[in-house]
Image 1 (cartoon, rainbow, N blue to C red):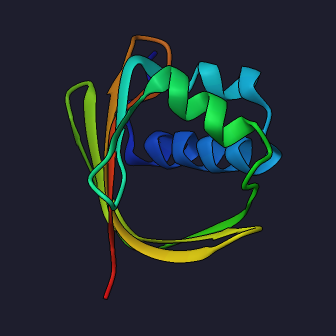
Image 2 (image 1 turned 135 degrees about the vertical axis):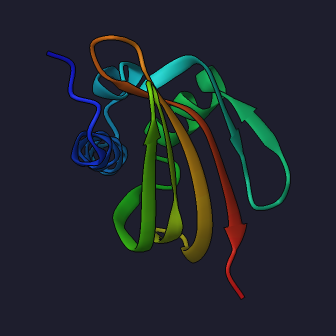
Amino acid sequence: MTDLSTDSVWAAEKARCDGLIAGVRAPLETLFASDFAYVHSSGRREERESYLSTTTSGANKFLSFGHEDVKVEVIGTVALMSGTVSMKREKSDNLFLFVEVWVHDGQQWQLKFQQNTKKA
């Protein structure tokens, strides 16, 4: 049976964050949809291939993620996740409001869209 619970969305988000901290591309490839898009807080849009390359290159390594005030809503095979996330990297620390759209492909959740906005 397919698990479409909010807990399973959280598990996918945790796996994504752990994968970004590890900086290993292979486990991340299954978590990002083929048409994944990320809109940076600057407004720049980045597609899947570029995002995976830049986040696993080691140029600006992720050290930790901390989530607060997160809401997850599952609507059929789509999940909306939003809240606040702190991202610590070797070269920067940031606090963002974020929105993510996850889609279940019948086997697992995949991240389709993410947008961050710097929190004042």
